[in-house]
Amino acid sequence: MFKALMVNKDAETGKTSAAVEEIGIDRLPAGNVTVAVEYSTVNYKDGLCIGPGGGLVRAYPHVPGIDFAGTVEASDDARYAPGDKVVLTGWRVGEVHWGGYAQKARVKADWLVPLPDGLDTRQAMAVGTAGFTAMLAVMALEDHGIKDGPVLVTGAAGGVGSVASAILAKLGYDVAGVTGRPETADYLRSLGVTQIVERGEINETVKRPLEAEAWGGCVDAVGGPMLARVLGQMQYGASVAAVGLAGGAGLPATVIPFLLRGVNLLGIDSVMQPYDNRLRAWTRIARDLPMDKLEAMIHPAVLSDLPDLGAAILKGQVQGRVVVDVNA
Image (cartoon, rainbow, N blue to C red; front, side, top):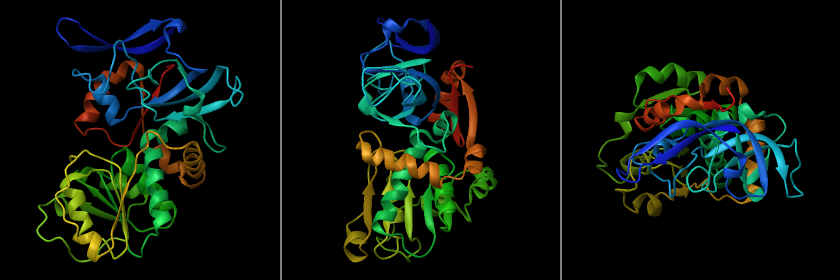
């Protein structure tokens, strides 16, 4: 028997509820690798899955947790042996397939990546899906060429923004962080952000399709009107790596920044990345993410904390990275 945060749905009322239960390994879904989970995280999608509406969950009962890190316990795949340390992000784990909020998980071997040297399982989940996505965004900007001048990070105090800011600062870029909470300014500076930008300065109605060239690159974790405004402020030929929809899926922009200023809009999807790119990203994380900054981002949690934390993250009340010790 092992512990899991189980989300159940009442057949009559349609309401969902989450509670820690003890279950047997026979209840795990199909897969060819069984992992003894050590840590998971709390992301926006997890908040939706735990919440009263059920969010992205397709079938109940369900174990949320869209990522995890741990040790292989059993494997029918030659690539993984008992004792191997592994990390998993994406592949609809925690949404369609049972996820990381349990002490054991069974998944397809293709979904896993060996934990690279320089990271332990706790650090890997301090990075988590948000940090993995942040690294994908930074790599995309590098692949297209970051211009001179500050690199803007929107939603800088959130999970993606925190890690993106720390990575960019470690790589030597001048980082401008957008936040709507003045109390996060010291936290952002601790990550290496050199310029604090109030959200109101960016998240305004777009009055002109082009403004003064300000940013050499951008990791946008918000979307919506903020992204539209940022596009008109990019330097000629600069790129925006867009990763988030917190501000909405609409884009009230014109084609003018793309036609007249050569701006590149790079969509980043962390769900179904090819294995080589996932391994490249995790290897870069182990090399380029300052571990002292990573520790400053961590908010520790246990399974029983998750219902409240899920609600808090949906309200934008969580700073940094929530790391869930599933065995505590």
